[in-house]
Length: 396
Image 1 (cartoon, rainbow, N blue to C red):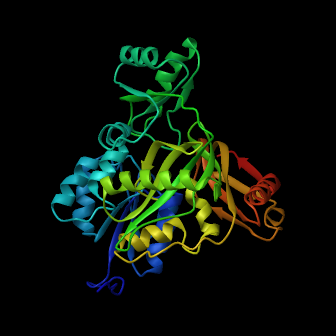
Image 2: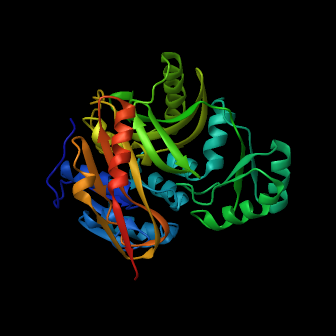
């Protein structure tokens, strides 16, 4: 019999969030709706999830010993990784000692490192992927590019949201791509993956939920990325029944291999009816923010429900929807979003401001959500709202 006890009592549930950005914030809110005590962690103060959590800690989550100290102090019922840059070997140790890691410590370890998940998908599960090579030195990097052939995409094996990613189209760009990958990785300099281009018609995120009910899928999410960083997403992405079935089969294969309960963002390239595996995140996906307006249960609500051991019998889709990321550039701790009366003047438009405390370079600071009768209309509505937005970046 599933049960949830009173918060702040010995019978209550406690969740430790490792990562407190905009995705973690929504997970924290959904857990609190279920009466769960939430403790948020990140490497900087006043992160979005910290603003709604019951308590928070600021530390580098690649520091395994500090991570253990926090876990032993808080004794959470659920440890929930919400970013990649975590001391995953310590998560494996903690899981062996009886702590519950979402979805599993092994899933967090494999997916933090692109090499682990790519080898699992391509070499163990036999899923089709882009051609790839791994490199630890500049010499190996050059050799990998020569073997695959230009153009290639270069990514640190430990990164996300496009950090350290670049495209190499000419020989002159090889050195700068190596430098970008070494400086942009979430866990510092290190090994990279070199991927050959694949011919595809579109790419999707298939949000896949594993729970006590089994495996269910959200409607496919189409999206546009810039250097690996999401900018626009929409739901549903039109695709053939054959391609959708193949996508679901690929998603089930990889999520079954990772195991545990929760939501997985499975990224796939689609060419006709053929499916090519790209990546998977064992947590809510940034492109899935569109589900905050498109579904009765958002990806965050689904994640909370599944990890708590509660059933997810199905996902009710409400209608064509779109999201548009608000990306701001500058170096400041003072950002003002103006003209909101125009941004929100159309029916079916919503705005989420994440509350990130500062920008250094470029950063996703919010998202516009829109729903309409068709996907194209929803995308156009989101774009109109975005164009109406005026962002003022003031000096520090």
